Length: 422
Image (tube, rainbow, N blue to C red; front, side, top):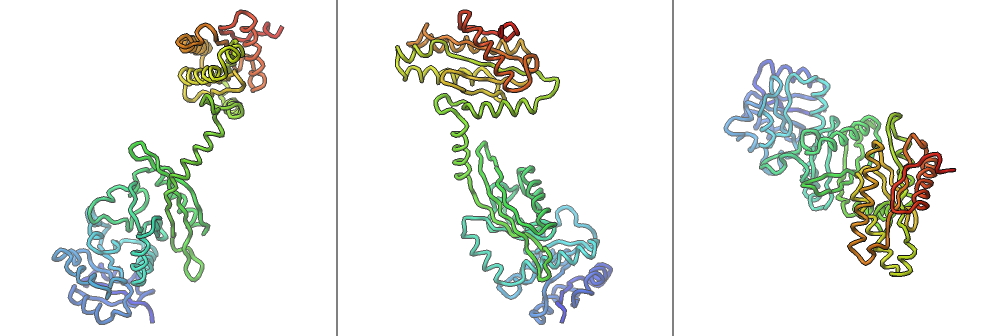
C-alpha cells in the first residue's frame, strides 16, 4: 500500500494542484477543515506519513490546531507542512516557529515539491530521530543534517556565528548557509563544498576561521553524503568541531619554524624563500629593491661587552627593521649580524629614505645604551630590475654594495653600481 498524505486544504484549485502533483506517489486523504483533518489523523495514524495544511487554516485561533497535532508522541514523527496557493509572502515563514516543518507553494515545480515532501518525511521518520537529537545535544561537537537542496534539516547546537540564532523561536530548519551565517565568505565556501558532495557523493573535511570582535575561532567541518536504498545522494550529515586550540598551536609552531628566535623576524631560509616567491610574482613594470644590512664592529662588541650585549644589539636591530618597513616587505636575519630586506613595488628614492631611516633609528637605540659609539650600521642596496631580476644576481649586487660601504668608512648607505665589482 502506498504511503498516505493528509491534505487539510479546503476543496478548490489549491487542493487540486497538490493532488495532481502527488497522487502518483502517495495515497491522498482530504479534509476541508481542521476538525476533519484531526479526526482523520487519529483514525489513520499508522498510514499517514505527512500532513499538508493550508497556511490560512493553520493560522486560525493562533495555530491552535497545530498545537493539538503536536502534543505528546502520537504525531511528532509526522511532518506538518504549511501550503499556500501562491509563492509565500513576507512573514509567512513565521509559521515555522509554531511547529510547522515546511512551507511550500502550490506553484512549486511538481518534482521539487515531491522531493521536499520526501525530505520532510525522512527527517521526521520516527520518534527515534528526536530521541537521538536530544542525546546529541549533550555532545561538545555540533552535528547537523542538510537536505538535497543544501538546506538545514536540524542542528544539535546553534553556534555564535549565526544571524538571529539568539531570537526566541528561531529555527535553523529550512534555511541555507547564506541566509544564516554572519560571514558570507564562509557561507559560500560551505555551500560550494555541499554542492560538490551532492554532485559527486564524496565527503570532505576542512577548517574555517571565524572572527568575532577581533577574536579568531577555528572550526573543523567534516561532511559526508547520505544515500537512499538506490545509492542516490539524499542529503548531507556533518560534524563541527572547535579546533581553535590545535590551530593556534599549529600556527605557533609554524611561526617558530619560520622566525629567528632571537630577533623575531624571519630566519634565513624563510627570508630567501619569500623573496624568491616575490620575485616570481612581480609585475614586469614593477620596481623593487634588496637591502643587505650589517652591524659594524659586531665582533668587538661580543668581545668587549659579552654575548648578552651582542644578543641585545641583534634584538634591537630586529625591532628597528620591523618599525622601518611595511608589513608586506620581506625582512629577515640571514647570518650572525647580517640582515636582508626586500622592498616590493617601491621607487628608488623611497628605498634610500627607508635605508637612512634604519641608520637613524638604529643609532638612536644604540646611543641610549652602553654600546653608544660602539656600533654602526652599513647598508648595501640593489635595485630590481636595474641590477638583476633573480635572487642570486640581486644578492650579489647588494652584497657588493655593502662591501663598498665597509671599505669606505662604514655606517652609511650605498646603491650598487657596476664599478663596485671592479
